[in-house]
Image (cartoon, rainbow, N blue to C red; front, side, top):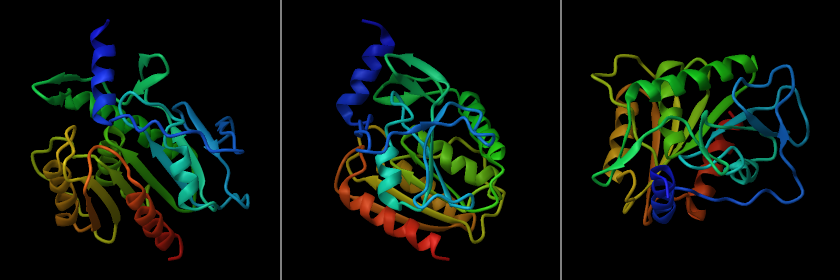
Length: 242
């Protein structure tokens, strides 16, 4: 068995792979429109359809794929045009990642340069959309790491981010201001993959930069439980109504 397969099995055992089912009766569509993002993606159109519909971009976790979080996006609000991107690192067997890494001493280690390259690829995809309406980015685990960094680097591109069980990327210091930017973050108190302390530190860092942050601590591990989905949906609906 390969090291990559062993790593994926270990992460799955810890709950890193959310393994959501496909939405019933709403098959995702490949993004082939003129404004399709550069990364591979699937899309659920807004209901009712609208060229100005707010967009929710979903970034899956390590070892998953673009279909994983689609039910989450649709459950938040049917008015959203949901675009789920696929990480560029192919781990085999339909599993992907945003950047490579390895499991060492009970921690997932990675090269920050690889992570920043992934951030840039998502930013380029957001720019390709050319959308003049609202864009929100939600990520789980590794995807949440990217979502927070996208807000830090290009707050002009997004209207808010949702960070599920994520952490920040290494920085010497944060210098940009995020006044008025909106963040919803949720993290399990007993998360064995990315500690609550790391997730909280990232949320507090965004808050110190001026963002309006809601941090939800829940009794659980590395997952997105129903209570978090409910509150995240309420948070997002509140932003859509502004």
